Amino acid sequence: MGLSKPHKKKIKGCSQYQHYPKTLINQIGELILEIDFIQRFIKGQTNPIHFIGFSCKKLKFRQYRRISAQTNINVIKELNWFFNNLFIPDAIKMDNDSAFIGSNSAKRTISQTVKFLFYKKIISIFTNPRNPWNNGSIEGSNSVFARNFWNKFQFDSINDIDEKLKLFNQSSLEYSDCGQNKFENKNNENFVPQIYFIRKVRESQKNNNEGEINILNEKIELPAEYINLYTLSELDLKTETLCVYFEKEQMKILIKKIKFQINKNCKITI
Image (tube, rainbow, N blue to C red; front, side, top):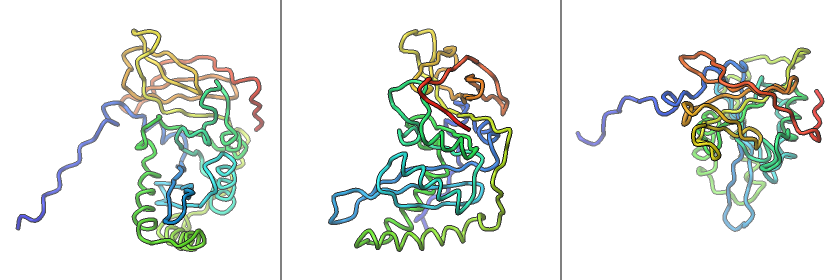
């Protein structure tokens, strides 16, 4: 009757022609958990309300916890709660917030969050800055959180938020496959502490004939033909080696390998 329009066929976006390393990321681990912060306000209160979200696409899983502030102390506290009550993933994907990755200025340092994950034998994956779609699972969960929780109710107090959040999380657990799977605590004696960085190559600020990526506030030069394309960098803390990979037709191509020594003041114990 002319009141609706036919659905258009979806066309793959920039992730395909810019060689986003989807296959390489999925090979890092079987269970990849994504985490993110959310900030909201309630009427009559000037202080913001903060949440940390957890999402795993494979398990159709999402959970949210209210936190006092977006700090690494709260991140470690909530991750510890998650591991003790739910499951321990193979890797955790997150953005470049200072509570996750650490200092915005100090070079080659390892954040407290990453050190904690190493202690739990979990690999860290950092998305490309200002590309929230790199964390597609948690961004999708954030939309569900907004639609079915935050925008659905009018909250009167913090206690009201906490009570309704329990119901939301319980409903999410019942929907997910998490309860139908058994997860054992990791005891991998051969664990190698590694950090992965999803980075889009930019034009070098020093050399117009080169591209560059930023790894822990250090500029890494790459061939100019990779500018505007995505790479996946693997930092091995055991050998202090950085390998930069490019994905082409689901294959891993090494484009650079260098020694990458961590700041001597940054102690790591596994």
